[in-house]
Image 1 (tube, helix red, strand yellow):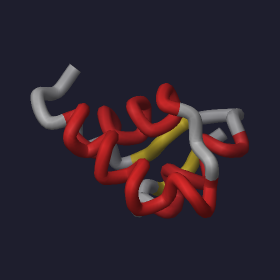
Image 2: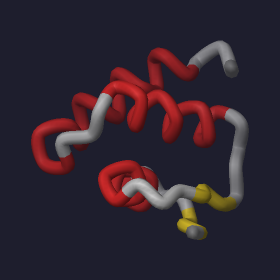
Image 3: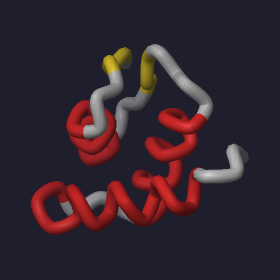
Image 4: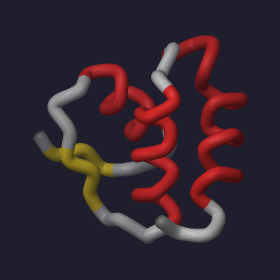
Length: 61
């Protein structure tokens, strides 16, 4: 897991938590993808997909 994933996870929760209601694991998965520089985010989880899109990731799945 990238070093800054937990900090990014907290930032995502603060920015999008109230509106999108992601779980802790949703935010950690999206944060890790951001920290790893992912170009695409694959998920079939609707809540996770909304968070990934809000964070600027391109969705697949």
